[in-house]
Length: 196
Image 1 (cartoon, rainbow, N blue to C red):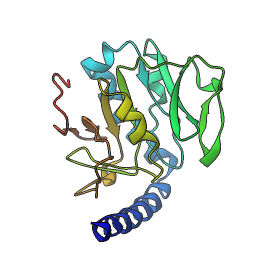
Image 2: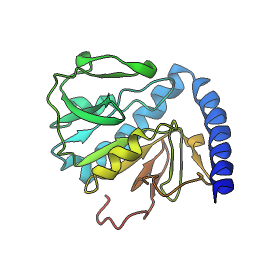
Image 3: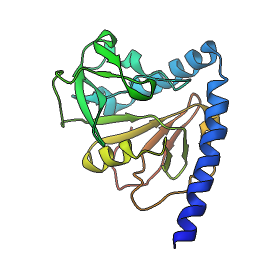
């Protein structure tokens, strides 16, 4: 069992390195084009249009930029690292975010905190079609998603980040949908109805 876990960890580390290098080599124009296409698909989802609160993230190092949804959504929340957990705080504008560890931007600790999130848009280094996510290895999103069970989980990524298989373990939390610039994948990883 321990050997299988170590093998999975090695495979994840190699995948992280490969995808990170490819993503960081993207031009600003490539990221912008992909982000616009993904945001159009996100905005068209009934679940997003009907959501009271959507969790977004501030992109880093070539990640898909979903922050344009901030202007169209009724209420948006952004993650903030709080010890070993992610706390989600309400944000009205990107100017409310401040520099944080790992090159991130996050809400000020005094920003209103919320647990009522209908849709969470999830970043990652990679996803597979089963909804498994290759994160950065610290488990922040896995722990957060485990507490946000009713929320629709939407993974967003560039085309090359949708890979054949992500090695996974029991505590990994899958997403319900994956959106790339040209594709929408319903993962059926959880029994979720009406993912449109």
